[in-house]
Image (cartoon, rainbow, N blue to C red):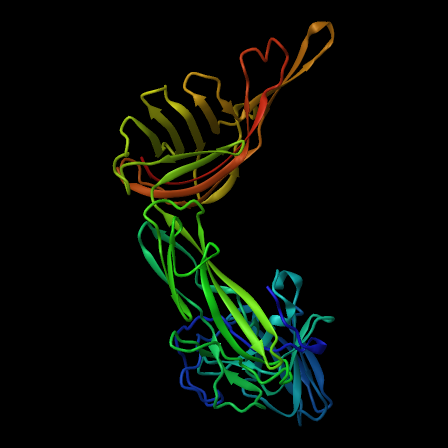
Length: 486
């Protein structure tokens, strides 16, 4: 992805902003007029305010968290005034950190004051600092962009000048995700994907300091720049979807991953009837922007869509895959009744049990996987075998009746006089439940459970103890999406 910067770290908001439209609150005449501005609820206080008495000689006030500083120059106030910074919920579209309410509410100044938001690397994560700006919320809940927000990457500050108090927040003006950013579809289901963002209100003059945030609609031809800066030569003049793709294949496309048809800012993805080879699938919009000099920039915006075809257990032992289907729900019967997988999942006396295997006419039951532990909940936990005084179970048995791979293992070391030193240990493994709803004992009800597991398990062959050979180590990783009962 190529990103443009303007000189002096003053890169301002010139293109799309992903946003949410929520409900309207009270009215205020201070918001620039627009037909459909973005509106959210008003932020609520989340801590104690910080206050300083500032008079005609000026001064500064800094928030309790140190992330917002208000600098008031001399002669901006005619008399001593108690200036307060009240932390509030950050309701700004794509807001970062806390929001702040500057008080006394409605205060105006005879000279511009400076508001400086400080940002941290933890707040940014992988977001470029030049993608930050300051936004303000009017009393009617509408959000407006401060078009002259300046980013100082050396001091890690975003700075604006203003002459009034209101609610302020630090935010980002671009977020490279589609709507929806993720989705889960049953086989054959469809989802509408779209590019969300803002368009420039053409009634706002180029030298304005505020511009209302107006949502892009599916009928708009393209994404328009929000601001008239940076200089006209480097200003973006177009920002359009060049093409859509499904796992790298341009739309329209139909294959094992499903089908994708697109038009302009929107696309329709339809899941296949069988589990795709790559799951989740990636639907990507390829954006291209052009400036006055003809330079082009490229942005890839992706939605990851999981295709759910059957309840399943998917497993890898030393990288070798094994897949099991839980029949009786989405798929009621196996296509071959003589060769199929059997999956059992349930809760017994507060203990989670999962077992899956393959059953066929040509061989005994094989590839048996078992996972069992007490007190299941949405969490991540380490699995502890009996060698470490636990009772958790994670085993894989290639063929019924043969030695299995399990958490417990023995470290054997040849010693003097043809003896063998033995140490009983337990492999390192963990399980994560991302979806789990407890069942009422004896209710006979069903509930979905989703999770992953990974770690090391060990194989002890019959001759290893006599020959003083340590247990063989195997890697295991898997995921499951099942219906459990009690």
